[in-house]
Length: 78
Image 1 (cartoon, rainbow, N blue to C red):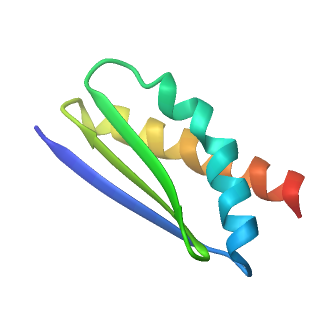
Image 2: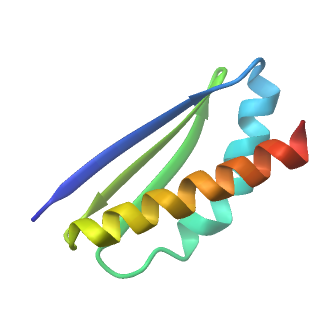
């Protein structure tokens, strides 16, 4: 089954959004086979798009990892 997810996080400034997006970039390079993850900063937002052809459990685990890494980045930045 093909699944698509889009997560949008909003911040107080564009510089914070850029810092969070940069902190998440290393994860984008290590996505497992069959999973595409793209994270970009647009203004005050960080947008992550995920596409995969795996089980729903894989999607949920990947979302959990993304949100955990986002929280860690937010805590370190601000």
